[in-house]
Length: 343
View 1 (cartoon, rainbow, N blue to C red):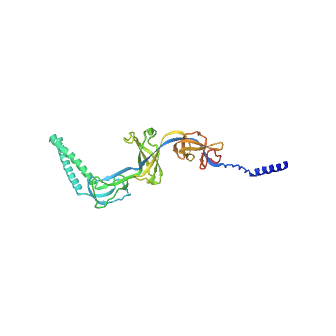
View 2 (cartoon, rainbow, N blue to C red):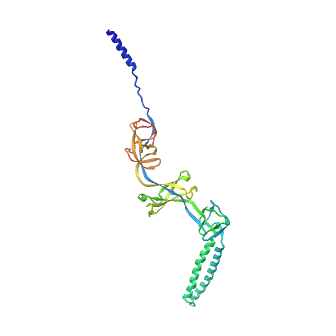
């Protein structure tokens, strides 16, 4: 009987042992990453704003009186030198006024010179002399005005540059004070932005800036501070700052929209590569390397100085190592293997 019980017990133990599943021991592979060293670097805040490019020189050419187009010698985009004729006009009234003013000027000049000699010899009264002098003075002013109007009928460029806004044909009548063409000198381009007062003392003439032009596919240009207005704009309460850019390849054009970035006050800070910072639930983090593992550390970022970014608040210190490549799929506490190390 006992022998039977022993056999049943053995069978039961065998069945129980066979029914148990072996528990697998899973070993997570180490994640390959690239790490960078936290460094100390001089950084500065960046003021970013919008602006529109304008040529350093731009002159709208007008007529002081009405005129009818006789000849158009240039077209839009043409290069023109200062003093070169662009359009010729005619106007009977302007020509007649000029001839009359010229005749009056020459007549009053002769009378003035004659009576000036007589007055010096005390042969005419001062009152009589002054009347001729005043008539001559008025004739000179009128003649110069009418002469300017007449000479502008042969409209010359007042600066050297490129022609624009020229849309005239022979026979067109142009009213007084209307722009007949524009000349721009695009060798130097200007852009004026409003700058906040609390950073104004960090700025000086010659300070660098960057201008990104959207019309040129976001191409960046180096600019310099040309002029700082010490008086704030009454509406924006900011200070107008003018930047200048050398337009070496003549790519920049009047009216192009741009994004302006101006570095401000400098300071010592600690930086990591921008690629090391990632966002989770609207918070910024980096993975710090500790004991061969990735430790997720919350950070507060500051100024951006590509390819780095400033870290304002965190437990990071200069010399610490952070993951700069291989963040995707990495979790807090993962063991890592360093593929290479960059600074």
